[in-house]
Length: 444
Ligand SMILES: [Zn+2]
Image 1: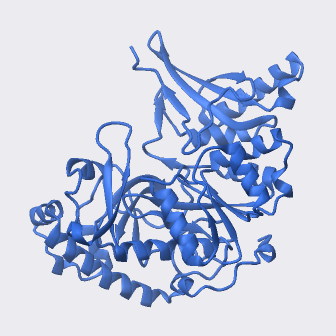
Image 2: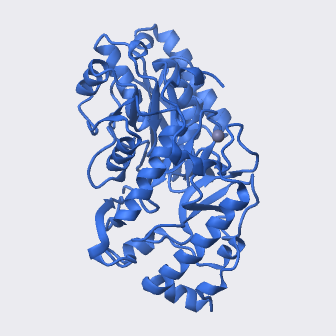
Image 3: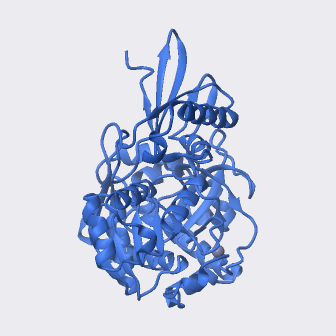
């Protein structure tokens, strides 16, 4: 562990006490809440009632935490099929906020919050900030998008509830982000990791070095990112890069967070009950085994989510964390089953490509994977952006770099790939979630 002494704001916060409950107390609380939420969903959400009835299952059959396995799963399509309000368990009179997340196809999904739900959300965000060593003395620049996306307001109200100073700058306008970061002596940044990489670069072009700013912590989420990306960010900016996990269907950001040990995401399991399943069979996976994360909201009023299949691939970490928190951890999420693509029979995740790239010196984490089909054969081209310094190297040096990248990627994926080195700034920067893959295989 390093740098913890620098976390001046990391004094104890009463909201964080729930992170340290004795396990038997936690489980008793979980069971009580599970029984209540199942009863609420059964009584108020038609889809849940129909599915439970079909299994001959009644709320009173939930007698232990293991009984959760009898309950039916919920999937994203359920929210689309019941669009906009079909999964609500609260009358609109009690709903005080709606958020919506856009899918790539079809209708968006709509999620709702009662005031009690918003209070829970703020409390888990407070616990998240505390776990990252952020406290009331901090100045937080919140560059998550404000609006229908849950990232902006979720982080905002959590930061206010913590007593920190929030700058609601939202996403975009990178030059202004850097000016504010410097002039307002910002100590904490919240945004996607890919956007922060862009900020580091842009600062350099403006003649600034973020390492000289008071900034010390980044709370990064809303897209999968690799351990290699963390190292890159920490080295290039001199801050601690902390991973936050969440999804709108469950509450938004604040479902889980890394503590100062950076060794997995603690799940706030007094509110969100985690299970890992084999995504093919739906059967539970033992602790330590990778599978799909399934979450049940234990306290949500407006939309109780029963066994929601997140599509995120991870594992429950059985060992206790040295930080002393008793809430369990999952591996940080580098892969979503949605992100996976299959090329020549091999499953590939963008994060694998990212890790390979970042292991090669002279590249920056801006890349784009382009999939095409030529004479019936899948081709994968990785466009890799060069740093300005490397770009001015000799042709021989560039060819050598290209060969090293090809080798690094092929070693990890076990298939041949084409690598194209592109000039600095040719790959489009995202102010939010980065787009990593363009699949043109079925374009014609
Ligand atoms: Zn911990």
